[in-house]
Length: 131
Image 1 (cartoon, rainbow, N blue to C red):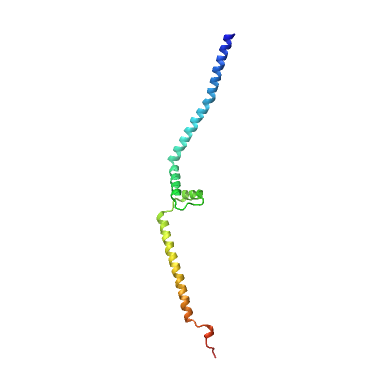
Image 2: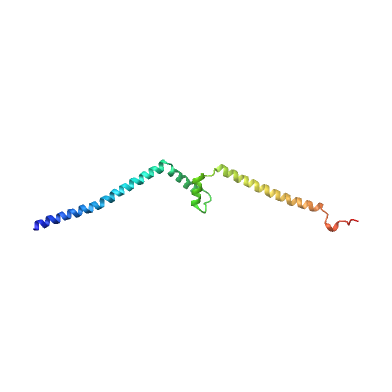
């Protein structure tokens, strides 16, 4: 009986080790499966150009001189329409500067003309009464 107990406990010991091994096996298989799924998904994103587009968008956000208040909106607009052409932006800035200068000149000319007009107008007090 002592030998049977020894064999039984040895079998039980092996069984418990095997059982614990089986519990670990599905996790490692799951781990490999999830890693392969991740790798497959990464390859898909790379193949479709998603990773390049995201990288380009994040670089544009990083390089923008004025950081937007809402970075998510920036990313959304950038992804939809792409970056504004730097030439277009520069052209618009130059045009804005020119228009501001012209506006100021027109306002100054308007003031000068008002002064000249007042010089030629006779005040109502100085008008001769008509008979």
